[in-house]
Length: 177
Image (tube, rainbow, N blue to C red; front, top):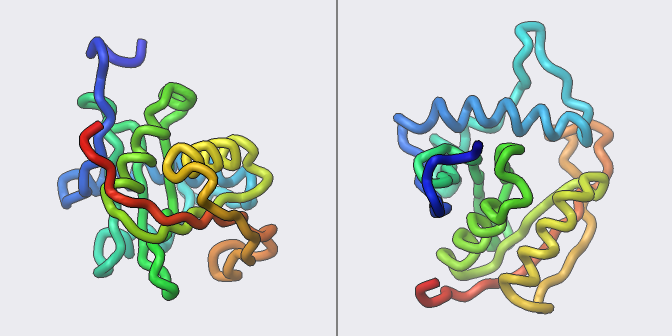
């Protein structure tokens, strides 16, 4: 059973000090999921290294958002500004029990339309589920007005990783949904 709420809503909540541990725990699940595509292995204590995660809590311009499904933490989004002026979705995670139920799509569309402007979304091409998801979200957000390109993964992020695929689009604010 996923929730006792009849029709839970999906919301994005800025992460403050009280939610930071929730995102840090969910980030372990995210890193585990990504290990399939990037080869991350757990450290000696059984956890996954995510050295850049603190930047999203502490560095100006970066942001961590908790995805809430009713009262349940369903995942998180990490964003950062890029040199060319776009906002990058650096990480996006939804717990497995809520995948393919519209929660991630709703959270992604809320994010893209709540902050109009240029967006850049990276994913590994071997991650077919992410490729389908982000291409569908881009089309839902802006129709055919988006493009896709390959860019190298910085060596500091994952040595010898295949190029990322990037979806680039520009959104406008939507009215009430």
